Image 1 (tube, rainbow, N blue to C red):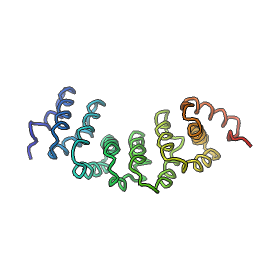
Image 2: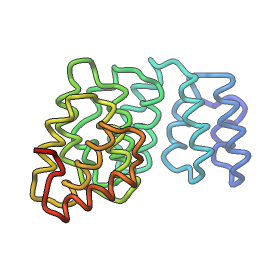
Image 3: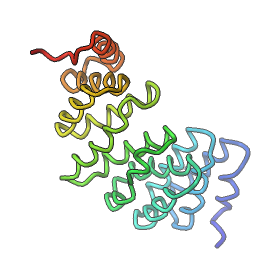
Length: 216
């Protein structure tokens, strides 16, 4: 089926401003025929601001059309396709997508995919399933660089008190990176204004001293 006004062609234009206007047009006048082209472009679009507009355009379409297409994209071999689909699902807030947020995605080898999965999961998790999600997320403590660790801390903190026993267990574990990350996240739980960098520095000091930092 031919897309109205050549949207698919303009979404693939060499000029990012043309692609941006095409995504804006697709969101401003939603048409279910746009959905496949928008999702396909998300998988390869190099510019962040265009990807952001593509996501917005998709959220303007009926979820009954977009959510199944986005869920299908989670099986893509392309990391960006998985990451952008997860990001867009988090923006839809449609909990029918929850079963598709698998452990494999939450522990994906690609940091950006995993981060997107964590953000989507805390938005979509059904009431009563927070503890199970927290258990999976806790296995990722100590992973990656600053931005990855900060994303995980934020996701864990969004789940509430169910994370506290898991953080305590990780803080007493053998992996120093996981210990530091757990202690920093626990510090942020008790003092949200502390800041991630300060929390990490304090956690490093505690681990170096060989203590869990808790008062007797």
